Length: 165
Image (cartoon, rainbow, N blue to C red; front, top):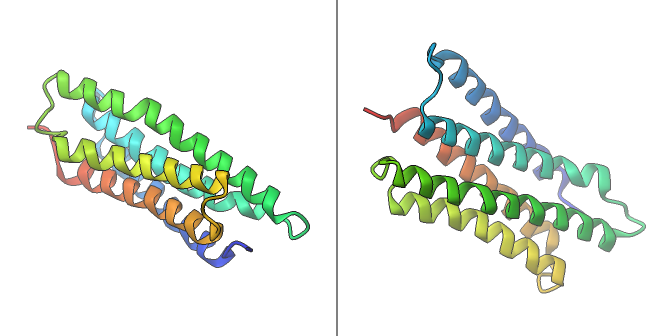
């Protein structure tokens, strides 16, 4: 099944927009003493998710071929799976560490569960596509990228409106 290149282009553009707005946020709110640990974490999560969505949206443009579409999907899904594993190995531990440092109100359990679940869902879906249990790979690939965008938008909104007092 051929990727929906229009949908991938829109996802890449939205992800680039989120990264651009976060750069403006960083530039305008940068204090002389730098960011707090929670703000630093949220900006890194936002950037990771947006760049992951953008990179993975552009990946099929470079990899997909009509001569061997199955190999193209396998490579693309492996990269998506690896990116989600890297996120799962990094961000949940860091959020738990921030909670232990006294930022439980800033990172309530629901936020931890939501953000970890998004990365876990991407990992599971990409893994199922690699193993061949999901046949509509183009559709589920777009769903994974939308989950990255959701994660990034959620982190952006929390960075903008949920502040340390």
